Image (spheres, rainbow, N blue to C red):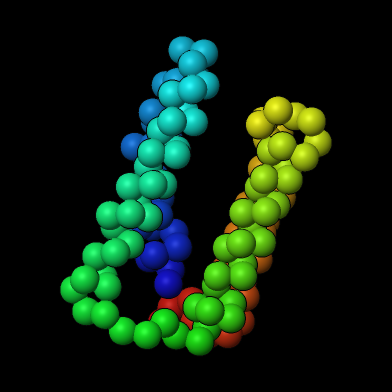
Length: 118
């Protein structure tokens, strides 16, 4: 779980981060939005199906009862912070810290259950 949630996630997100930063420097926010949406679509449609194609199996109960609700909750918080306060899609530092703290709380939840290093 540690590798999937931190190291691998950072490694796979670095190309999107650099493209988004380049778009922000050139004052082209559409590049950043297209990059994030395109990357997420490819990951969902191409990468996530590979484990099922290689060796299919059932989801664990923890995935359905803990991980998916946390993912949806953080996605809703992201939408509310980005579009709820009239900020027109911008997230300020406080909201970024709030989202990061949500992720850190999720990691602590996993650590408390003893699932972080398994």
